[in-house]
Length: 353
Ligand SMILES: Nc1ncnc2c1ncn2[C@@H]1O[C@H](COP(=O)(O)OP(=O)(O)OP(=O)(O)O)[C@@H](O)[C@H]1O
Image 1 (tube, rainbow, N blue to C red):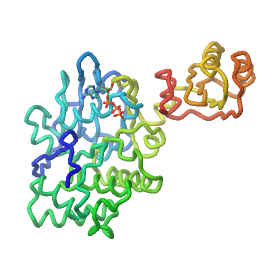
Image 2: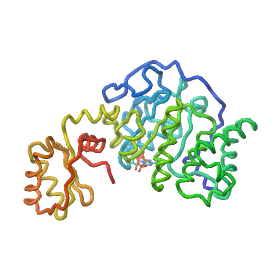
Image 3: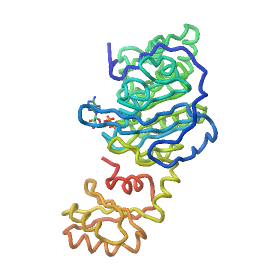
Image 4: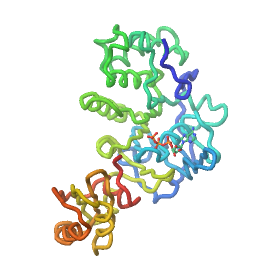
């Protein structure tokens, strides 16, 4: 028995708490205030303010602040090591910030933080389930950690099995599940106490496309049902697909925040060119940076990514630059701006690994 990891174990003893209001208003930190896509005037469920967290000399989270409103899905988008997990652990009270504060509903997430924790459902990055128990037994176990009364627990377990679409596998042991099914059950464990804020840390990493689709659709439904959702990912497509607002995080800093449309509009008329090439790609990217009309250039594997103004007009100059740098281009793709392009523009590097 035992996949339970204390690092991620949110074994909080909770009771329901309906208080969600009474937080003073204020803007996000470090970025222009943006308006949420769906919840227009609702008070935030989560308010993270000026969060700073160091590990030794390394600053993992540097002055990060954002809010999430009821019914809103907020995505923290950034590459590995950007500070997403640390931010989430601060939000859930699993780590204490060096400075800054987290408020959930009207409760401060401080040393005690029991009332604040009671409102949060945390789904860790690693699956934390008991492999030799069935799906239903796992949910019962986690429900008991939430101190749910027996009858309520029974009802919630059945509810959650439906929500994560595992009712027909309820009596099967978890070690017979695919990675995607385990992740869905992991999400279910975070939903048993009907949290006001659901926090998911990269829940689709390593799952097959079908399960990924199922997870994303579930998360979308949670948001639509009025739950506030905080979702971290390094997949731009996921942030685009399910998040009402996105915070772009890099090197521990929130470098921009807004709806997809707001973020993309920062690029103005810029396009994104992806060139697949062989040869000296670093020299090629450097040569591109020297061209008028190129605002960003980055190498990722066999690809060079450019953020440019008037992509199609610039192509001949880009191909000449490839020649000069000793790179042989085998394919070219010119695309309208997306969050990947925003990330490249803001940070100078591509988002993908
Ligand atoms: N317990 C720790 N001790 C030392 N350094 C840490 C610790 N946790 C995180 N870090 C460092 O803090 C930075 C941010 O890490 P974090 O895990 O928050 O990033 P992330 O965006 O979640 O990336 P990933 O998706 O890879 O987990 C990294 O440089 C990481 O090495």
